[in-house]
Image 1: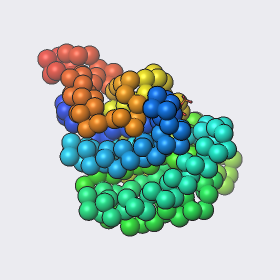
Image 2: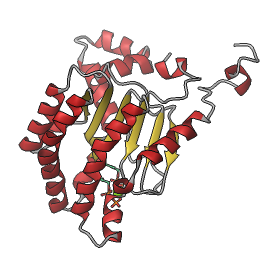
Image 3: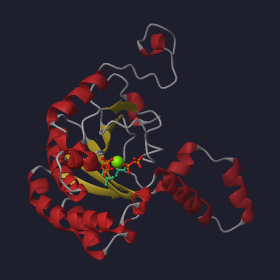
Length: 254
Ligand code: IPE
Ligand code: IPE
Ligand code: MG
């Protein structure tokens, strides 16, 4: 069904999604401002693209700002947006050199103009690159994404009968087709840094069968070794997608 399912025995996750958490706590522990924590966290973003590519991961999703993060103090939000507008353009040459393609998930129309401009430029300048996809998730919410898909689906019918038929025959595949993103693979490995064990509205759809990995390391301190450990842990797991272990190992009937 999904490409992940075909790859049951593949040891390298094709799509790694990261909840980059712990910037604030990291900064506090060093006696620094939260914004300095975000600045150091943004630097790790550059590294993780290279580490993922070197590990032969095809896609890496990075949760940078959730739909719920608008509830933060206005000054922190402004700082995050400015950080993006100023740091992202500096990353473009590096991404080109590394043959990395940037994609964006989330409603960026709500972001300040300068941040949007930086994002659009990064996406445009890297669109033909092929070594690794960096999916920056901004003003992203898994629930909102599903709601938008439902709205899109039902707006696509003119008559009531067609709509009722589509509703009766609705499947995950038909709804997914309305999410408008052909290029995104199912999440194989979902990593959260910073010690919390929750999903916080990230990739609710795509992570349906993801392997979950939690680490206490705060995002600004995240290292290549941490990523390698997460991938090694992933490699040791048996992904069953509903089947029995015997079936997966090929010692029982399909
Ligand atoms: C994650 O770090 C970055 C964003 C949500 C933008 P936090 O800012 O949530 O850091 P903590 O959880 O307060 O330590
Ligand atoms: C999740 O982190 C969002 C991002 C990393 C961008 P939060 O720090 O906002 O998550 P909660 O609110 O503690 O669950
Ligand atoms: Mg947090």
